Image (cartoon, rainbow, N blue to C red; front, side):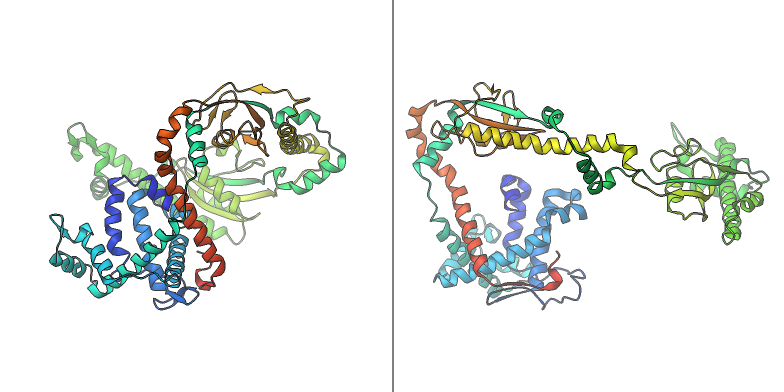
Length: 527
């Protein structure tokens, strides 16, 4: 959540959202609750943090506040699936737990918030200012509009200030050393080159020899990869409504169809008068009526024969004939059924011997019966040995490529390159996108490379780039603009400090969590 806020912190939307949060974080009693989680009520506890009990009502308020922020960020793109992926409910719970931990710690630290502190904080809020100055009347009106009592709001502000003082006190522990500043300076200015060797599964696949037992074991562990797809064959009857004669439409039918489907009959100048399109309307209405009639006849015929499963009787009742298919899969249907997606889907649901339908498609109305079903199965190893061996080699090749890269990395770390065919990246500067010359794009490799020095020229582990594993060491590193460091040092330290402060704060929170007794209501365990 914090990451998203940082990313979009200059966005006008976020600025508006934060303006709303000033109030909503303190009092949102006016929210309309949903059905909630199970049998929880507003007074039920959501989570207990040591001596602090957080109600389900507080959890709901926090959840809806966070969700509103995401609505502002994503708009209609915030689908239920995306919300689940973002884990908004868990974020809400974590926010409440963190708040309780910090408040309790602040009291233990002896942090005090005076009445003057609260008044100054409120007076500085733009929501309560008129022409840049605090307005008591504006303050009262805003709180009244949101149905928040001043006493309640001020108590909430006192809590928030206590939390902020605790946060500031912890963050003040963070410092940035000259070495850290110099490391960032050099990262931005230096040029370096790598010596490396890479291994891909394709490079080592030919080295792999498998025993019969290894092939057998691989098949046993990966049966689903080798199963033949389920197959069925069907007997079916297809009724074409267009070919059903004896159905006519009267003037009332024509008029009703035209009015109901008037958008279909447009010309360059707009809706065409019925007189101009009457024959087309008549034909469209007749086709629709024929389709309805055919569907009703098909439904009646199949319902009459469902008990016996006699599709021949269905065909005779409709004056049609039965057709049969050979065995086919859902992915490769019988040629006569090509494009009939819904029909195929319905057919694979049926049991053997069961009648199904009517299924209406563009071609007509189908009635079907499963003639034969052949379940998915794993063929005998003798039939698929070549496929199994190939897949087993591919899987083993992935592991072998990594192993060879790890062995090479260990050698390079010792300054030993015997037996390794090293390549040279050529000199390059730091690139945030991770584009390493001759290697590929890997932010992870880029970061690792710029941590290397002449004193520690090799990483401990190889890095995967695409399908290849890269073992690497520093070939050369050229320090540029070194004389400028002294002038830029303090500015760089200030740039690094917020991250160090965040790290210090997160470390403190984790320490508080590890020592606290946190009990989440069982009804919220799986959010």
